[in-house]
Length: 190
Image (cartoon, rainbow, N blue to C red; front, side, top):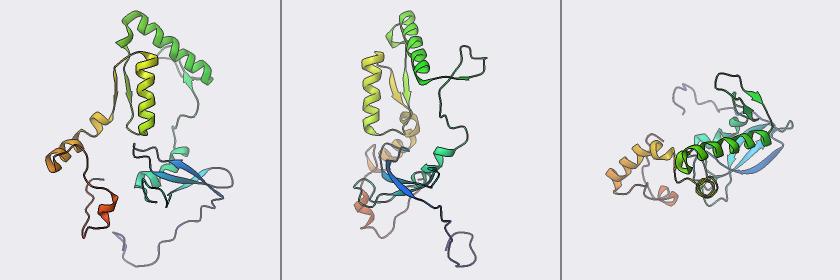
């Protein structure tokens, strides 16, 4: 029974009229769970599900992964490059080539004036390991700075502290197989 329900009537799941499932990798964290995104006849993403045979997640998704398809239609989602010359101006739509050229030109100007290490890159923690590696190569090799960090340093600081105090290691112990051998599993704050 679900919390707050007073009757045991079956939960009705709306038919989202999915016509095609497309394989994807969940982008919410660096685990990289295998998933499929369901599309309707208008080619809109309307559902997400885990891939049963996947070694990483064995068909399971966390709540964020289950709802990932909603990112495609969320209000305020950036879907085109915008540019402005001064902070007080309104953004104007531009082409990808123009936006990337502008970023490149401005990075060069800053480095010419203040040195290569005047640029810092701070990434999201919601990238796959390969994406972290590629961004690190881009940061150090192409941009030429060693100032590279991810928000995971701050985001996971409390978790790492808890892992070290509880388990003596900075990462969570165990694996998915452990779930099958436990009598009681408590997921706290997840």
